[in-house]
Amino acid sequence: MNKFLRDLRSQPLISSVTIIGTALSIFLIMVVVMLHNINVTPFAPESNRGRLLHGQYVHMRGVGEQEGNESSMSTSLPYLKELYGDMPGIDEVSYVAAQMKRMDVKGAGGRPYAVDLALVDDAFFRIFDFNVLSGKPFDHAASEAGLKEAVITESVARSVFGATDAAGREILIGGIPYKVAAVVADVSTLATNAYSQVYVPYNVTNMASWTYGNEHTPEGGPFSSYLLRSKDATVQQVKDETARRIEALSSRKRVNDSYEIIYHEQPYTQEEYIIPHGSNSTPDVASERKQRYASYLILLLIPAINLSVITQSRLRRRVSEIGIRRAFGCTRSRVIADIITENFSVTLIGGVIGFIFSVVFAWIYCSASMPSFGLSSSGSNVHAGMLINWSTLGMALLFCFVLNLLSAGIPAWRASRVSPVEALGGLTR
Image (tube, rainbow, N blue to C red; front, top):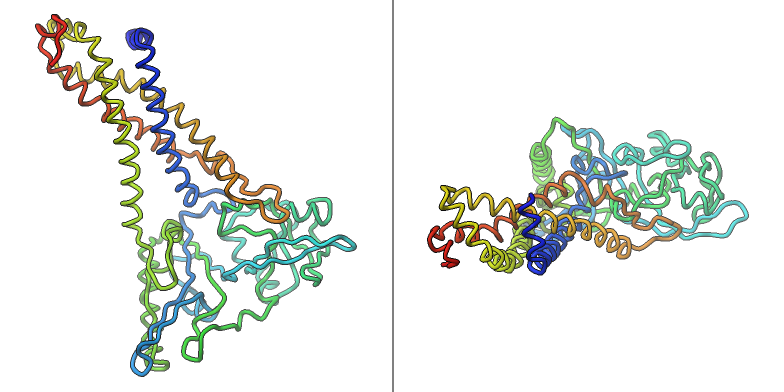
């Protein structure tokens, strides 16, 4: 360590450039990693992202007399219930409106506020772990009966009632009185599945009977679904059962409606869901991963080449030292290992600096780019748990190690190849 510190002090410019270059490299690559991971990393109220599955579209194609016709859209409630109801390997299924609404809310005698409103069922609150501050979310009976009950966020409660202890009070939503069943903590807009400001049962409307398309395509409608996979079931088992059910539905539909249902490997995992795709296409996870890993490699290789040149320059000043060690019997592998180890210390210093700056940048970027909707005082509400976990820390350490290996490996190998006679004479190959 003393030798390493002396080396840093003896070549301050080269050492500074190396540390800054390493920090910039780790900064860039970790920003890319964090901005991807924030869409898949579990955090409240989406702590079950690892088990969460999405069922959202139906794609139908005409056969026989309907050949040439094709339709894809969000789904109807009867279709979703037939497809995912009582499915093995699934603990909970939640049926929700595919689109949020924008509604006015107000208290007695107060002024109206525009909020985001989600139409959900009671299972929604068992899949997503909301922090309940007052009361409790509406139950299955209230959801099925379409009772005028609402779950609101703390920002809405404070704006309308002046306090978060609002369970049991009356709130006007679109001019219609609702009872506040529960108040929950504000939900970050980064929690794209669970986010809203007001949640009411979808049965307060008659949308459960809505279908899109025509008489041949009643599977289309205004709903989507969330499935919570059992811990002892695999994603593939759920997909296989879904494919079997779709084939059974499709066989019946070919006879009755001259249409078939195209299977697009639903339900989707969180990783599949965030990949851009349409209602008539399948997310290409393999291609997305290849592109992501290629970007990681490029972000590592370009600075590694430059850092390798700097490392080679730093080692030229230590040729005599290497020659003496070789003359006294130090093996080439030991020389290589020592140089890589010493360089890793520099890489680690730069990596820590780069990692810290990447966290700060990602926090600022997410906070600024995700708007604060309506009354939500938290906006994107980014916290450390969304950006930093054992996975990101492990990847940062791995990238530091790989960058060190790429930037110091070749210079170390070349230094070990210098003969003791040439090294003691101050020569390099």
